[in-house]
Length: 404
Ligand SMILES: Nc1ncnc2c1ncn2[C@@H]1O[C@H](COP(=O)(O)OP(=O)(O)O)[C@@H](O)[C@H]1O
Ligand SMILES: [Mg+2]
Image (cartoon, rainbow, N blue to C red; front, side, top):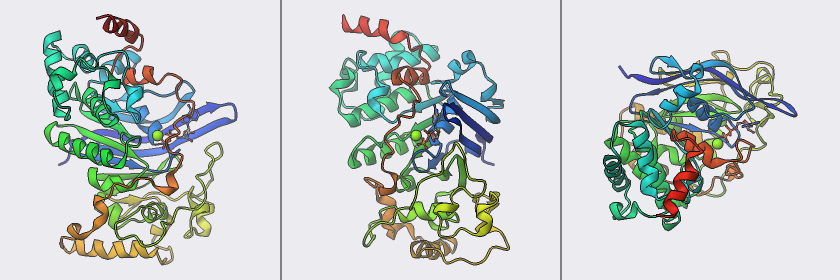
């Protein structure tokens, strides 16, 4: 049996704002199996970052946990004290943030930045920790790792800096690694390299990964399972094959339709409209107003989760036994045919081009990079906290390093 390392049940998080209560997370359920990679996919603002930040208990001051639990190794993270969380962050659960520059301290040599969490969390001497740091740096593919330990972040390229951020996250062999859009700021080639690297590392290091992206195109390469988020809910969840070849939710259809493929002819279709206002979420299916497949009930009552298989479920009334037959988009029907072949045991992956594609820019997702939602004025502090470091530690460390 697969062992669950993380179990999130009915998570509800709101933010207190001048305009009212932003219901950012509205009943999220998911789990993470040991050793697997779960991808969480969805448009900007769907609640991906808030979901994973709650696992680290790194939420903005105006966050209100309205309900639910996050079970990690038998206890609820939401009930842990700050002190207990400091021991978990960086050691048991580590996080990689989107922008490598804000995750690295510009005035500290990178060797020290990798060794610091090791010294803090592992029972190692300083020299042992530095040795381990050099090993990890080599593992993530930085040439001349030992010598480069003495360099500052600006002396590395963007792709190398992202590798260093991964090295810091892996320094203490975390049980869970959370990567929140770790490649968005990088160009396509580097993105592909970083994803390749993460895949390789997972084979070497026994860690479970939650990989967040707004780009469904990159998911096939890295994930075992996919959860699709929309307006603070998970609307569909399944194995990579189930999501790519047998998607059931019209929102997932939209994401797939707007994903570039090798054999895409003509323009990509983007999902019309914008996500709902979470200050006043709609009472029915939150995607209904943007969906060509919405029925009367979608505007009145929120759909429950319907099971498709043991591993696949989707929150859409279309799966209700009494729902009328609908005619999905052509691309989705094409995929359903592939799914039939998959079920019949045919190897269809080898001749499908889209798995290999790392899409450069997903047109419906533009604006994604503006993570400005007043989450924090001090990205360093947050990111240092994620590695288990006291944010105030950096000034002293930094100065000492500068004057060496
Ligand atoms: N500190 C905050 N105050 C108010 N609203 C917030 C805050 N943080 C996030 N939000 C809102 O919560 C929703 C989910 O945000 P987020 O998880 O960052 O989305 P994603 O990572 O999927 O792009 C968005 O509507 C965002 O504006
Ligand atoms: Mg985000």
